[in-house]
Length: 421
Ligand SMILES: [Zn+2]
Image 1 (cartoon, protein in one colour):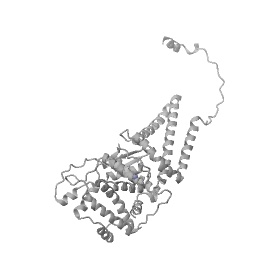
Image 2: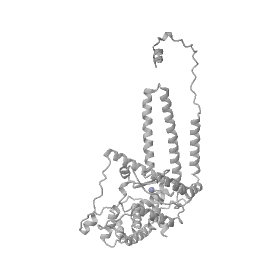
Image 3: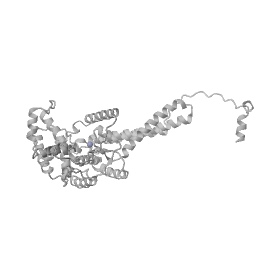
Image 4: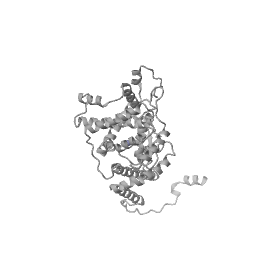
């Protein structure tokens, strides 16, 4: 210690002078293809090649029919061991890493003379770049599956021009089934629909998917346990009840949909995605089929409640065609009156209340008290945040509609018509 201090205190002129080096001519820094850049180029090439391979329908079909279910089962059973949505943690971590990069870059303005810090920021940036390339590559590959995952293989499935007679016939069949179910459904003492527990729904879906797998070969695996989202208020504002993630293979629910009568149907829809049926219309149809195969009236009924929205959309389309939809149109109202054939007004109201999980109207009609404790008050997102989230939601669904075109939500009725024939 003392030596160091002494040495430092020695006047500069007493130190032996360093030999003067002739200044080397300044070389222009050339970009060198280091191991890192070679690795990145190879990585991009591999991801692009995989994406390209999945553009071939037969390969994409082979993957989704034979390989995907096994992969989903393996990854899903591992991620199921962690009861929280890993996908959301990954997104949050990515956001933190991105923010840190910005902070490091700002600090670089002040610390640019420190070579060690410059190297650290460079290394951090390069690591982030690799993560971003893998994430982008995977989402491109997923898009290829999304567009080529049809249950109908190579058939281009664009038939959606249902005649009014066809849709009316479908609505009639729907009504007959619902009339048969509505009194069989288990209800509590206040007539509220009893939602089955997640274990009951899973056990039921396992049996149903075993039956459906003869027709739709990707249903070879069992549904994973549901997870609850960390960002339920945002999902709710976004208009999402649940979602299925790749590559972590998780089914994640917003906690605000737990009580809804349609829960089993939403679960079955997500399970269809999980098995590799990525298209929305097909997942809706298959979700309905899974519920319809159940022996539990509460689960079958959930499927019928959920598919009703699609039927009504198809009815609008068949009735109004390209003209704007007007639900006050006399002809339309007359048709609806003809179509809606519940046993009586009480049953109609019960169906409406089951659908919304709000039984106020039903109890008012019967002039009785509803002693069910009110649903928890979830509150809403702060106004500014809520607006951003709902705008993003609208944009997301608009993009999805653009991307999937005919295979967005409305093809479900065509699938139902084909099935009923
Ligand atoms: Zn979906």
